[in-house]
Image: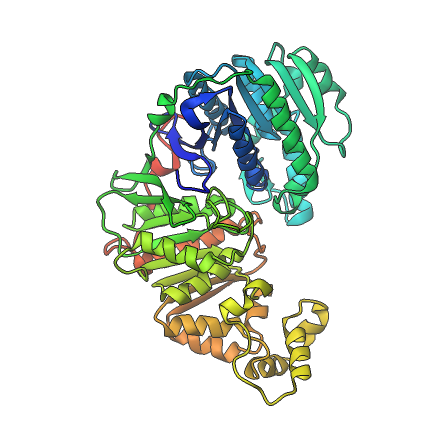
Length: 588
């Protein structure tokens, strides 16, 4: 394993619906216990991913083997989010993960579940009781989970509820049948043992759940702790905080106590037999769409390659992670697009930059930095891996911070294409000098005036004052070099030969084009820049139709500009149902 990386990627479970996971095995193939981490659902999974990785690393150091995994139709696993029988598939996924861990023969087998992951783990434990079960801020029922997520969506994104019985949550939609199936999940309505020992971590900011307490009393020996830092993790940006660090410490201590006192032989062969690549679907010609996990560069970045094997790809689409989220993209968009583009003869590499997701870090650098100073080197490493003979034969794609990295990475590489969505176009202070965002050359203004004007031009508050500034004033700022217009960056990319797609909301479009409308019209005439404005597009694309609207645009753009000859007239829905899981029964 590359130094600084965490876990080994595997595919396991049903061959027709393979599940993606990361396995952590202590040195010497011995373990005091084996623990499966059942993730939360939806946006909560994105925010909690880093905490789960950290927990797995700490448990591994304590001599405990760990398996992290994605449920069917989530993360990097096969299937789609709107496939039928979602709840049955998610429960079966947890069962497959636990069966794989049991097959290795650790002396103690346990599970950790957060939020709906705790609910799914509890139901699976009813089928085959565990030695240890951690319920981390559990959702007592699927109905309560959906109620909370619906309210969060209304407050953070807005918009009307669907009228078809489905439920819209931030970035994820649960179809009517899934809503009904989730509503039937209620821990308090069950009977029987779950585990010898249960650790219930409840949030201090929530009301005490007497019904859940009464039910767990008959499920095993229960110990109660506090899920500190949970609100900050699940509603802000998922970064570790002091309270969450305490929670992780308590979890490691408890699981270490439950584990056997001495390490026992751990049969890694069930994990070794698990594939490093898998068939995740089929294209319209029934050719298998294959994904494989790779490690890239000195930092050991984790990437997932999607392609039709033995098919030459004119370019590789390189998808970058957003913020600290892993490589799957907003609402899993990168995964869905990659599997569709494979049918157009295009290879895709979705990758975690160093210090993010499942990638390692460069020596001396912190984890979870949204704008790692090594990003440009990381992107070059990924491009050279994807196209060793000509690293420019890539199409970079990203949202927000990923869009920022795609723009500047594309410029450095002379990339064939760049596709960005609501990109951050303000250079972070730590990267300003590196990105070359400072004004070039002296200006006929005093340093004091230039500093003031630059601060005003780049300041986001008071927004009402800035929005009221006339177009001529913004043109002056741009012309004097006091503000580098994002349109200048688009122009530099076009001049370098890149094909550029920019998709933004109306407000973002206005900010980007301030003082540069004329330049933008000129670029549009070059036919190498497509600038699409979508009304009411949420910045993080969490709205009900945001991902669908953006997906339609970017899929066709990349297919038509870069796909193999003969595929340009295919429709999005012409991709084989095999990719979306239809015609295949979910695992049971």
